[in-house]
Length: 241
Image 1 (spheres, rainbow, N blue to C red):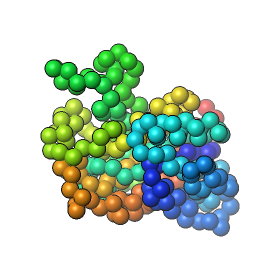
Image 2 (cartoon, rainbow, N blue to C red):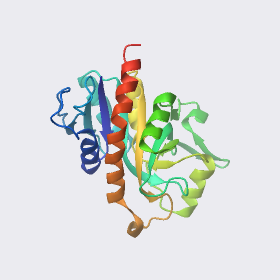
Image 3 (cartoon, rainbow, N blue to C red):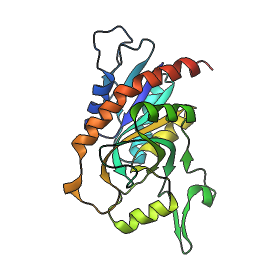
């Protein structure tokens, strides 16, 4: 089974690759280097290999990069991964969030009655659901919070915006900028998708001094060290169904 992991920037890809490559001398599939991507493989997990792609920032770039990668070779699963903001107090900085729903949180229209998403407008859907069993096992293995992850085109920087998003999505664990784009591309190819986010900051007023990007990147690497066996087990049971 081959898994495509899509990140936004190189630092996230470095962390994912570090988590997926702890045993370089063990037997296993050879890594591939995608255009704009990184090689990574858990060589101690025969039968599974990973390609890590730097897809770019934002849902449009993520969708385009993912779609291009999926056209180049067969995959069984797509994972959107990186850092993001966490809704407090459920997802503090340094923690992980595994999506049980990938939500396009600001794709739609503002109206006098409030925000309408694209589903309400009749233009498609605004949520992708990862395989429930896989998401639950991934959260358990990584110690992450199982909760919706919101995709936004503009990162939240005020208390008012944070409160608005929390009111519309009261169970949300995190926000990021790429998950829905990755999920759209995966769905177009008939592939399941998973999203995992390491929290670097609280969703709310923009306070660069409080960001913990280093801690989040370290948590992302640790999460992928734990995630590899979960993905391998899931692949063995689902790839040929």
